[in-house]
Length: 271
Image 1 (cartoon, helix red, strand yellow):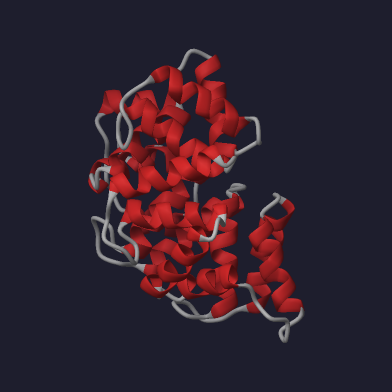
Image 2 (cartoon, helix red, strand yellow; image 1 turned 30 degrees about the vertical axis):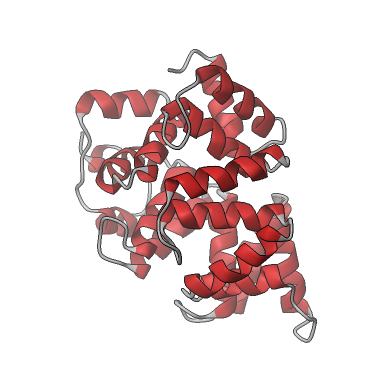
């Protein structure tokens, strides 16, 4: 099933994605159940099987799925399984942001506010950060406050986020580690993602799982979703459907979008 048959997005984005295809039967499954498709792709990402993950996310991107679009942007920005391509990453992030993806909205806000890997554009930064802040993103609200008050001292967390937006991931990881060790749950979750993708640190699924579990137990919805996927797929945690559902319910209970979608699929009989 070629992406041209699926894409509801701008022609430029379609051209950037190319003509990759997934197996007909698998693509049909992901289209019927996008939340489970994202589970599968995320599990493949954890194992560094980027080509398999990309095929699934490209299928879901054809439906305008914001999580899939955002994750394709990550692959393009970091050059995971493909050459780094910031133009492609920005197109994917913007498509995800316009589809309501709060992670993409925040990512674009940070990229445009600092002007490290892309030209600085404060108008765009404010636009995307405002969208993320409306969706409840506290870090986006903090960055907006910094733009409004340029002389305001920034927190160490914001400093790490700004370093990351400039592509200085190793330096950001040092700060996130220090904050995580001091008990900052959000910083610990950020660090877990970095270990999972090998972003600024040596890739380690075991370390990512350890950090995600600590944050999940401390109540972080994003980490709870990550742990739910690990238990569901057997990547990073032993496969355990019961544990997966328990963590998924906790994350969905805090209205974490990916978890809410996955819970709806579970209730609807998704596999």
